[in-house]
Length: 286
Image (cartoon, rainbow, N blue to C red; front, side, top):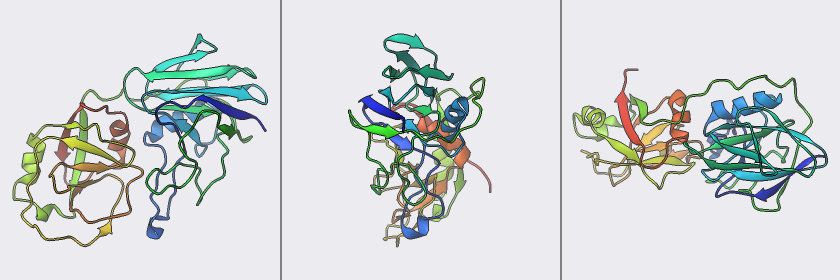
């Protein structure tokens, strides 16, 4: 079976697919790629099914070597320099990696996460129906280390000729907010104040949640909230008052009040927003 040998793992590179659906009642997060459109675009370039697993890098890229034969690869998501054995190769297009050659995805020029797809998909064993690495639950393969060998599958279709257009990483992250279910735990006018306030992405953000820095939101109820179910995009407000937007590896339950929920369509941009990026919440009706 052909393999990818990890020559340089980068700061944080994980295997990701569409995630674990339908198991939240078991306490298992959905997980999966944070920028799902970018993952699907990379798979399309090499002719994979939309469910195929890819590599998700974080800021610093990754380098892999073809083992067991030539392999077709493509990079999407955050733009980055791509090289094969030191020679420039295209980003956003399928490239043939000869046996023994190394493809290096450099640091992201802007944005955070690049996606590396290989024709056939990363064929690590699935856990609960997904090959994704879940950093909160500890499910799936561990983050990549130098020397890891990743098996490559065989199922694929015809490659696409061009990259599906993707939005650029945001200069300002605008997140719509559907109010509730615990908006009544905050002072009257909190949603109006939130819309007028300016936040920025905090450096502590990760695959679990996008943390923010900015004005603290004030609660009018100070008792304890019993743990309740959490969904993707939930905006939880911890005791420091700064909103946290739950991303793919979020916990399935939580005890801090949820002021609102960001629609899933807005979350790929959150996956590419670097620390310091301005954040604006826009409350919308149901």
